Length: 210
Image (tube, rainbow, N blue to C red; front, side):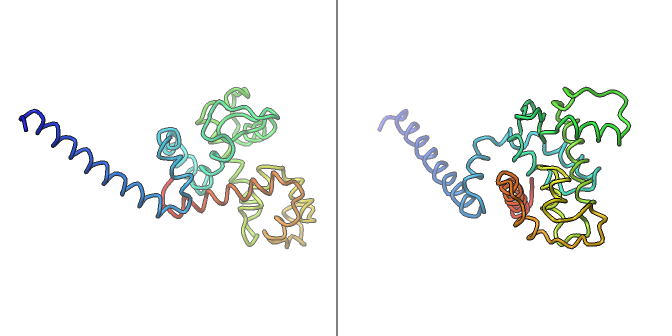
């Protein structure tokens, strides 16, 4: 066999071996994943799905919330698209409404703000994490505050109170459990929202990283 053909053949064999090992590695990765479908999606769009990880970590630490929850909300709300606009005017990564943004601006005493600022990932993540942290504090006495906070984030505080039969979070009869809340929700999209976010949070925790 001519020398050039031997070189080419050796190169091909190396590529085959590398391909086999890569295939085995990917196979093991998918087999160990609790959500193979998302794992495949993540391999294809890794840069997009991890673009805001550092910002999410920073804002979650500042607001005292789980970064896994923040990222799960971003995934569910916008699939990491900072320019997304919702059907009711929600903006950005965490799909913040104008009304919610006004509450954040007032609480944080932000001097200069226009709704278009919510398309800035840093601004949006801070506003959304502030809303999440406030909701989690409101239901911190519950058996599991997260479903309550997610229900409020998605459907509003008044609906959560209606579903639990409570006037507000300080109601002395404030005994509804997270299971009772979910069972009482009569908006299918909100029930699905809670399920989707919690499933994504479990996935991030299972693998131990954003």
